[in-house]
Length: 222
Image (cartoon, rainbow, N blue to C red; front, side):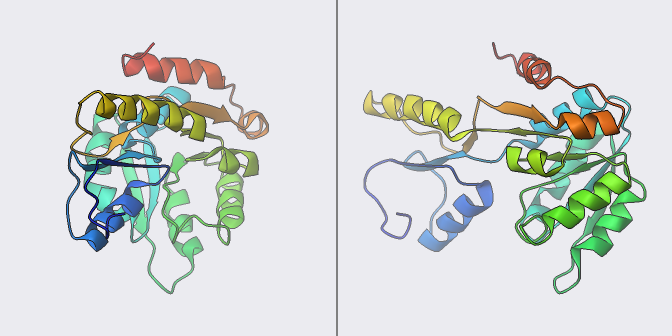
Protein backbone atom coordinates (compact mmCIF):
# COMPACT_ATOMS: atom_id res chain seq x y z
CA UNK A 1 0.00 0.00 0.00
CA UNK A 2 2.77 2.43 0.86
CA UNK A 3 4.55 1.77 -2.42
CA UNK A 4 1.29 2.17 -4.35
CA UNK A 5 0.89 5.76 -3.06
CA UNK A 6 -2.83 5.32 -2.28
CA UNK A 7 -5.29 8.11 -3.01
CA UNK A 8 -7.71 7.20 -0.20
CA UNK A 9 -7.01 7.28 3.57
CA UNK A 10 -5.20 4.16 4.81
CA UNK A 11 -5.20 3.00 8.44
CA UNK A 12 -2.64 0.28 9.14
CA UNK A 13 -3.13 -1.91 12.18
CA UNK A 14 -2.02 -5.14 13.86
CA UNK A 15 1.61 -4.15 13.31
CA UNK A 16 4.32 -2.72 15.58
CA UNK A 17 5.72 0.77 15.15
CA UNK A 18 8.95 -0.47 13.58
CA UNK A 19 7.06 -2.29 10.83
CA UNK A 20 4.95 0.79 10.08
CA UNK A 21 8.02 3.00 9.94
CA UNK A 22 9.71 0.57 7.53
CA UNK A 23 6.64 0.72 5.30
CA UNK A 24 6.78 4.52 5.32
CA UNK A 25 10.47 4.48 4.45
CA UNK A 26 9.97 2.04 1.60
CA UNK A 27 7.05 4.10 0.29
CA UNK A 28 9.11 7.27 0.46
CA UNK A 29 6.81 9.39 2.60
CA UNK A 30 5.88 10.23 6.20
CA UNK A 31 2.91 9.45 8.42
CA UNK A 32 0.03 11.79 7.70
CA UNK A 33 -3.71 12.20 7.92
CA UNK A 34 -3.90 10.09 4.74
CA UNK A 35 -1.64 7.22 5.87
CA UNK A 36 -1.55 6.41 9.57
CA UNK A 37 -1.57 3.48 11.97
CA UNK A 38 -3.16 1.99 15.06
CA UNK A 39 -0.18 0.20 16.60
CA UNK A 40 0.09 -3.27 18.05
CA UNK A 41 2.81 -2.49 20.58
CA UNK A 42 2.19 -0.77 23.90
CA UNK A 43 3.36 2.72 24.84
CA UNK A 44 6.41 2.70 27.09
CA UNK A 45 4.57 4.83 29.64
CA UNK A 46 1.94 2.09 30.08
CA UNK A 47 4.56 -0.64 30.39
CA UNK A 48 6.49 1.26 33.04
CA UNK A 49 3.29 2.13 34.91
CA UNK A 50 2.53 -1.60 35.04
CA UNK A 51 6.00 -2.30 36.43
CA UNK A 52 5.48 0.30 39.12
CA UNK A 53 2.00 -1.02 40.04
CA UNK A 54 2.92 -4.71 40.06
CA UNK A 55 6.40 -4.37 41.57
CA UNK A 56 6.43 -1.23 43.72
CA UNK A 57 9.66 -2.29 45.42
CA UNK A 58 11.60 -2.53 42.16
CA UNK A 59 14.27 0.13 41.79
CA UNK A 60 16.37 -1.09 38.83
CA UNK A 61 14.75 -1.77 35.45
CA UNK A 62 16.65 -4.08 33.12
CA UNK A 63 16.43 -3.67 29.33
CA UNK A 64 18.29 -5.55 26.61
CA UNK A 65 18.40 -3.43 23.45
CA UNK A 66 18.36 -4.81 19.94
CA UNK A 67 18.80 -2.98 16.62
CA UNK A 68 15.11 -2.04 16.34
CA UNK A 69 14.33 -1.24 19.97
CA UNK A 70 17.50 0.85 20.53
CA UNK A 71 15.75 3.91 19.10
CA UNK A 72 13.52 3.88 22.19
CA UNK A 73 16.45 4.30 24.59
CA UNK A 74 16.19 8.09 25.13
CA UNK A 75 12.44 7.93 25.76
CA UNK A 76 12.89 4.93 28.04
CA UNK A 77 15.55 6.73 30.09
CA UNK A 78 13.30 9.75 30.59
CA UNK A 79 10.22 7.70 31.51
CA UNK A 80 12.17 5.42 33.85
CA UNK A 81 13.51 8.42 35.74
CA UNK A 82 9.99 9.83 36.03
CA UNK A 83 8.84 6.51 37.53
CA UNK A 84 11.73 6.46 40.01
CA UNK A 85 13.49 3.59 38.22
CA UNK A 86 17.19 3.27 37.48
CA UNK A 87 17.84 1.87 34.02
CA UNK A 88 20.15 -1.17 33.79
CA UNK A 89 20.80 -1.78 30.10
CA UNK A 90 22.94 -3.69 27.66
CA UNK A 91 23.16 -3.82 23.88
CA UNK A 92 22.83 -6.99 21.86
CA UNK A 93 25.74 -7.13 19.43
CA UNK A 94 25.08 -8.72 16.05
CA UNK A 95 26.74 -12.10 15.80
CA UNK A 96 27.05 -12.47 19.57
CA UNK A 97 24.84 -14.66 21.81
CA UNK A 98 21.93 -12.79 23.38
CA UNK A 99 22.61 -14.47 26.69
CA UNK A 100 25.81 -12.55 27.45
CA UNK A 101 23.88 -9.29 27.42
CA UNK A 102 20.95 -10.56 29.45
CA UNK A 103 23.30 -12.06 32.04
CA UNK A 104 24.88 -8.63 32.48
CA UNK A 105 21.44 -7.05 32.95
CA UNK A 106 20.13 -9.72 35.35
CA UNK A 107 23.11 -9.26 37.67
CA UNK A 108 21.87 -5.80 38.67
CA UNK A 109 18.19 -5.49 37.70
CA UNK A 110 15.13 -6.01 39.90
CA UNK A 111 12.85 -6.53 36.90
CA UNK A 112 13.47 -7.27 33.22
CA UNK A 113 11.31 -5.48 30.64
CA UNK A 114 11.03 -7.41 27.37
CA UNK A 115 10.54 -5.27 24.27
CA UNK A 116 9.30 -6.61 20.92
CA UNK A 117 12.65 -6.61 19.14
CA UNK A 118 12.82 -9.73 16.93
CA UNK A 119 16.60 -9.92 17.08
CA UNK A 120 16.51 -10.28 20.88
CA UNK A 121 13.17 -11.89 21.75
CA UNK A 122 12.25 -14.62 19.28
CA UNK A 123 11.39 -18.31 19.17
CA UNK A 124 15.08 -19.26 19.33
CA UNK A 125 15.90 -17.20 22.43
CA UNK A 126 12.71 -16.87 24.49
CA UNK A 127 12.96 -20.09 26.51
CA UNK A 128 16.59 -19.43 27.44
CA UNK A 129 15.85 -15.82 28.39
CA UNK A 130 12.83 -16.80 30.49
CA UNK A 131 14.81 -19.52 32.25
CA UNK A 132 17.71 -17.17 32.97
CA UNK A 133 15.26 -14.58 34.35
CA UNK A 134 13.50 -17.15 36.55
CA UNK A 135 16.73 -18.59 37.92
CA UNK A 136 17.98 -15.10 38.76
CA UNK A 137 14.60 -14.39 40.44
CA UNK A 138 14.27 -11.30 38.26
CA UNK A 139 10.68 -11.22 36.98
CA UNK A 140 10.14 -10.55 33.28
CA UNK A 141 7.44 -8.11 32.21
CA UNK A 142 6.62 -9.03 28.62
CA UNK A 143 4.53 -7.85 25.69
CA UNK A 144 2.27 -10.79 24.85
CA UNK A 145 0.15 -13.44 26.59
CA UNK A 146 2.24 -16.14 24.87
CA UNK A 147 5.28 -14.98 26.85
CA UNK A 148 3.27 -15.05 30.07
CA UNK A 149 2.17 -18.63 29.37
CA UNK A 150 5.82 -19.49 28.66
CA UNK A 151 7.06 -18.10 31.98
CA UNK A 152 7.06 -14.28 32.08
CA UNK A 153 5.51 -12.82 35.23
CA UNK A 154 3.01 -10.62 33.43
CA UNK A 155 2.32 -8.60 30.31
CA UNK A 156 0.19 -5.74 29.06
CA UNK A 157 -0.98 -6.18 25.47
CA UNK A 158 -3.82 -5.50 23.06
CA UNK A 159 -5.95 -8.22 21.49
CA UNK A 160 -7.01 -8.28 17.82
CA UNK A 161 -10.60 -7.71 18.94
CA UNK A 162 -9.62 -4.62 20.95
CA UNK A 163 -7.67 -3.23 18.00
CA UNK A 164 -10.58 -4.03 15.71
CA UNK A 165 -13.02 -2.07 17.86
CA UNK A 166 -10.86 1.03 17.86
CA UNK A 167 -9.99 0.67 14.16
CA UNK A 168 -13.72 0.57 13.42
CA UNK A 169 -14.23 3.77 15.41
CA UNK A 170 -11.46 5.52 13.46
CA UNK A 171 -12.86 4.25 10.16
CA UNK A 172 -16.34 5.46 11.04
CA UNK A 173 -14.90 8.88 11.78
CA UNK A 174 -13.18 9.00 8.38
CA UNK A 175 -16.43 8.02 6.65
CA UNK A 176 -18.10 10.92 8.48
CA UNK A 177 -15.52 13.39 7.18
CA UNK A 178 -12.84 13.30 9.88
CA UNK A 179 -9.12 12.88 9.20
CA UNK A 180 -6.95 9.99 10.29
CA UNK A 181 -4.61 10.76 13.21
CA UNK A 182 -1.57 12.60 11.82
CA UNK A 183 0.77 10.33 13.80
CA UNK A 184 0.39 6.61 14.58
CA UNK A 185 -1.56 5.96 17.78
CA UNK A 186 -1.60 3.25 20.44
CA UNK A 187 -4.72 1.38 21.40
CA UNK A 188 -6.82 2.86 24.20
CA UNK A 189 -7.95 -0.67 25.03
CA UNK A 190 -5.59 -3.25 26.51
CA UNK A 191 -5.41 -6.37 28.65
CA UNK A 192 -3.14 -7.58 31.45
CA UNK A 193 -2.26 -11.22 32.06
CA UNK A 194 -0.38 -12.72 35.03
CA UNK A 195 1.38 -16.07 35.34
CA UNK A 196 0.13 -17.15 38.76
CA UNK A 197 2.67 -19.97 39.06
CA UNK A 198 5.61 -17.64 38.49
CA UNK A 199 4.08 -15.03 40.82
CA UNK A 200 3.76 -17.58 43.64
CA UNK A 201 7.32 -18.80 43.06
CA UNK A 202 8.51 -15.20 43.49
CA UNK A 203 6.36 -14.66 46.56
CA UNK A 204 4.00 -12.27 44.79
CA UNK A 205 0.22 -11.99 44.75
CA UNK A 206 -1.02 -10.21 41.63
CA UNK A 207 -4.50 -9.78 40.20
CA UNK A 208 -4.59 -9.13 36.44
CA UNK A 209 -8.03 -7.52 36.48
CA UNK A 210 -7.09 -5.17 39.31
CA UNK A 211 -3.82 -4.18 37.60
CA UNK A 212 -5.73 -3.49 34.37
CA UNK A 213 -8.25 -1.39 36.29
CA UNK A 214 -5.50 0.62 37.99
CA UNK A 215 -3.74 1.21 34.67
CA UNK A 216 -6.97 2.50 33.12
CA UNK A 217 -7.49 4.79 36.09
CA UNK A 218 -3.99 6.21 35.67
CA UNK A 219 -4.78 6.98 32.05
CA UNK A 220 -8.15 8.49 32.90
CA UNK A 221 -10.09 5.68 31.21
CA UNK A 222 -13.27 4.00 32.51
